[in-house]
Image (cartoon, rainbow, N blue to C red; front, side):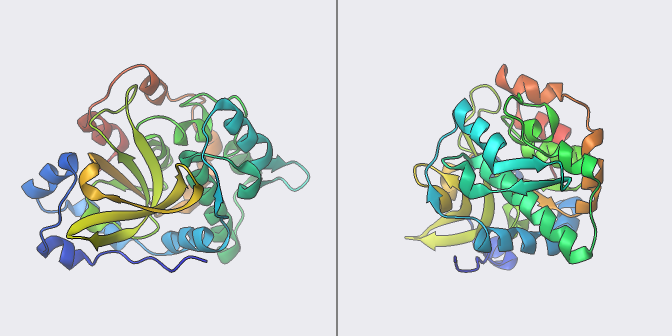
Length: 279
């Protein structure tokens, strides 16, 4: 079991001269956090705790990293499985290895949502859960999983469209248990290099700030990793604040053409902000 992560205190980030990634840093230097982002920070708590419980208690370690079509098929056939008799999803991360970052984070989301149901004595309708299933052939932008797995801000767009949470780019407001898309360069879309993770906090190493996160990471698979914040160009944090709105998962349009286009063309971060409600 991993040690419970901690975030760098907000005041320390505001006062301590934190070295920020180049794209996000300019925005933070220009202005204080927006009112919407501050409200998002205040809404932290329950679902983040459930996410961390899943990471600490239910997710295996290792297993290797691979993201070929065969690995997506394995995820669909063995990792996330619709059981008609139970009218429910079974989420089995050990059966999905080797796997990749968006698959790992999506399985954590589903398991945290199941924990949320249990803690509230509620049950989302079967149609909603079935809509969250992973299918072997599900292109980017198609269905819930196809959105979460898309290039660019796929996970953030899914959350924005279902109104189940908030998206923001200001690391000063981040809390352990937030989902996070890291962009390693300024490219978004067809030529991007990115990583979907669960944020665990920050730490200092030899005078530099490192971001600590959990995901399926290269090369080892499931586990915790750190990377210098200075390497990261843009960040999109996603916090689940209204999980009850997953009740509408089956009402999503069959295809999100904006996300589908991520494989063919480049996008600016300003466009991503507008389209995904990133504060």
